[in-house]
Length: 128
Image (cartoon, rainbow, N blue to C red; front, side, top):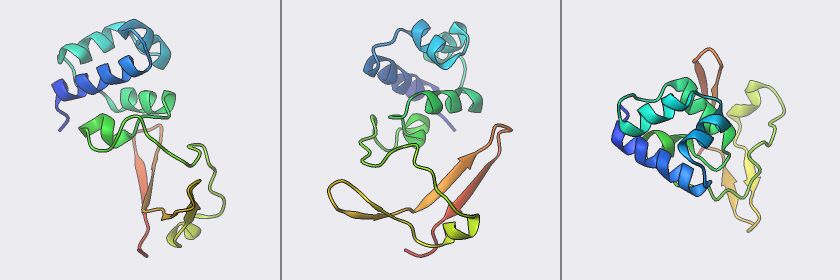
């Protein structure tokens, strides 16, 4: 379960980082301003739709950090967020290597795709 008070603190941290007021943040992710107010006060828990809008709008926010505080914010990624993976799903079973700017080889551990109907599909790299 998501702890509403801790989620609200992370949301405040995001707004502070981007120098956005609650109303400007609501406008940016295209939700009602009252939604932000209710989340910040702890009255409501975030919906999946809300979380997906935040993640879509702000590239530096990691999903797991936003939901449960694990991970880092802002993301200090050395690879482009919008990198397209070409090939079929079968190719996802093979280890994929990414060469970061500091020449350290990394292997993708898993990929999670979220669909607009609220479902998701997870691909886990079996070869570690």
